[in-house]
Length: 204
Image (cartoon, rainbow, N blue to C red; front, side, top):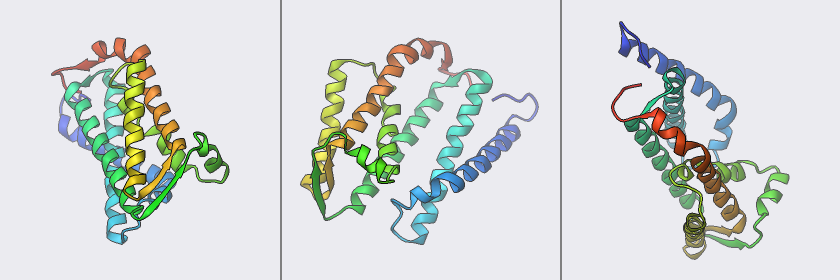
């Protein structure tokens, strides 16, 4: 984002606007789902709400900057992925803590359909969306699909072996589909798009 006279003030105002918008979206549509992982007291829930709102605000700010200039710094993109990975691993860690002592398995690769029919949409949607950005990092190929499948299978197996949850082939199916969607974007869109829009030094 560029503003000729007061660039930092302009950026601050834009970020505050993004924060206000993100807080409204979070409070209106997402806060009820956050309780799924926030059963650790009021202080934890409050901190979690603030962190998620700030993450959404930053991504919204970056997205608006890209829409304005049609370009993005490589350092900004790296920061986005760092935040994404931090959130992803924190989410997995909290979910594992929530399920300590739980063990089970489901060998139905379409078990998520039954979950959706029963009104439990949050977990299937998250399983479908959470690995798409990771899939943006490399192209679609049999080798990459196989390695992604092994990685997801390892996480699910750890849940079962260490009594941290349920080994669910439905989760494996959605996570693998999530990676594949990201791979498809990389192969057919991002590979040619990246050299024109990602800058090494120029600011937003």
